[in-house]
Amino acid sequence: MKIVSLKIVFLFFIIASNYITNTQNIKNRNLTKKTHPKCLQPIHYKKGVLFSIAPKVLEFTANYKSIQINLTKKEGEAETQMNIYVNNTLKETLFLNPKKHTKQISKEFFNVKNKNIKVELINLSNSLKLKYSLSIYGNSNSLLYGTDSPKKGSLNPNQSISLTVANSCTQKYFVIAERINGNAKCELIINGKTKKIMNTLDKKITYKLNYENKTPTITLKNIDKNKSITYKINILTNL
Image (cartoon, rainbow, N blue to C red; front, side, top):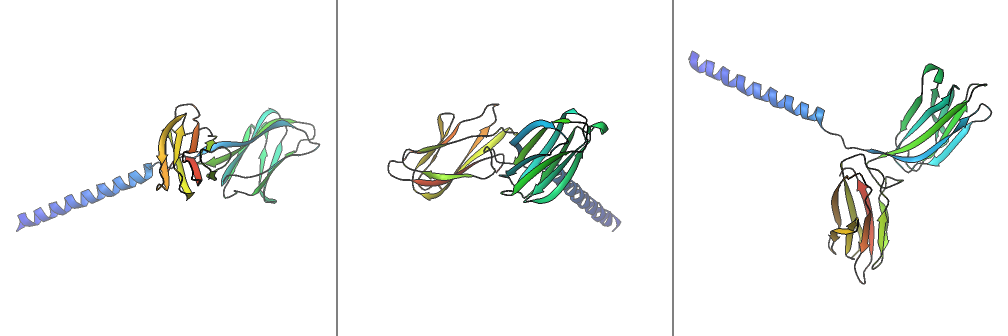
């Protein structure tokens, strides 16, 4: 009877140990799970000298869901105040103080697509000046230059559309072309070579590209003789 009880206890110990090990492995996988990469794409760049006489202002409409604003000291000791407005509402005030070894201040904003952004720089030092650079980046997993939205349009027979691709921050990315309307047959051309055909019944095609330290030429062409297509196309760092 004791032998049977010991066997049951030993079996229970093995099952419990395996459960704990598997649970820990799942936790470890979750902790080390790779997040989808996003790339910082340049939107605006401004440099100049900031005096105490008048503030400098940069205003634009955001084409990205999230943006990053960087103010960097090049030369000078003037303490500088940076006010950031979203749709004319003050959202953030940051201070750059070169005397305290602050050389750069940064702030990221989310959910700002199609909103008006105003960056105001104010020199708080009466007798000092600041030579600066102001950089604005869009934070996106899309590599289309200047926006994180798909490119949309129409192609008549034998027409084509070529895409401007921003710099990639990943080792691979994906070209995704979708049919919105129309039955035209299209081809996806990468660097002058046809890589994929969108046949009449295809709603979407996807092509994976490996990053090769050069900007690819990506073209979608309608190769149908008498049919048109309405399309959308994007280049993403992840699916």
